[in-house]
Length: 311
Image (cartoon, rainbow, N blue to C red; front, side):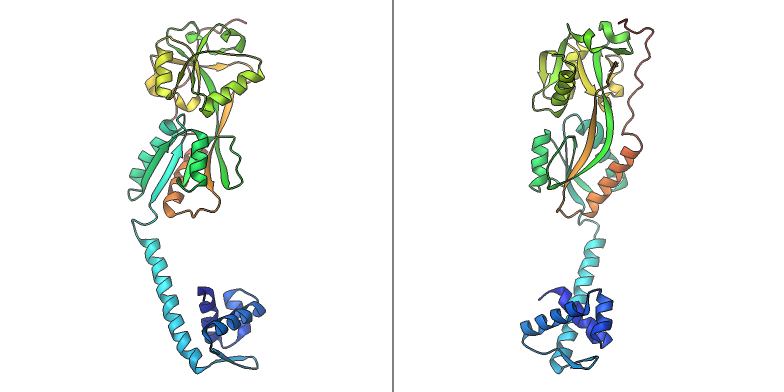
């Protein structure tokens, strides 16, 4: 027995007519009639006398409809109670890759604590392939990652595109430049994220397209460690623009790579069949709003140099 069948039976009882009842519940009359036949077979009693165009309740039907109304009333009340309950559907789990979590997602979680104080967010920082699997398996409500992601089970919603910038220490010879060509990087030592990092893969692809093989001297698991190595003059690196924060002032300089500027596209991924709770909708609303505004916390302006490197 299904709730829809109870609604159909009540509609017939209240309208006294199969045609009007089918219009009320928005299904065809033949489908409605078949559902009532199935219901009568299941309970073993006739519910209606079919008197021409009229449908009149049998004695058993009158008893059944009274109970059906109570059941539907309780279901409606339960749905309203759940929708209005301040603590239900307010616990969500979100993920992000290491080059996104501290700069995009963490500030958003802090904002949610002010705008939606009843929303409890559990966050997970991990590599893209692990986050994709967690969303597919239902461990995460959503994840913010860099594209590409290809999985037919996922909803993939692009949020923003940002440039990837060369980052050097404040005392590096490149520090007073605005942009630099790839050929000028031939003798430089690079600090890179680990091979599992999406960013490292994207950078390798970009350099590969330009027939350039960077000399990797150090590999780091965290952006903060990478920045430390670069600030100490141990090498140079490439980071997304969002990683350029006010804390970098006085120790790091960001430059554009001349020619074709590398970029990455950031997206939010969700399971196509997972229920989207009110908490998820609230978080996504803020996420989309920040993306439409052009990003999240704006980075400092890249310093305009006194000169550019001669080619």
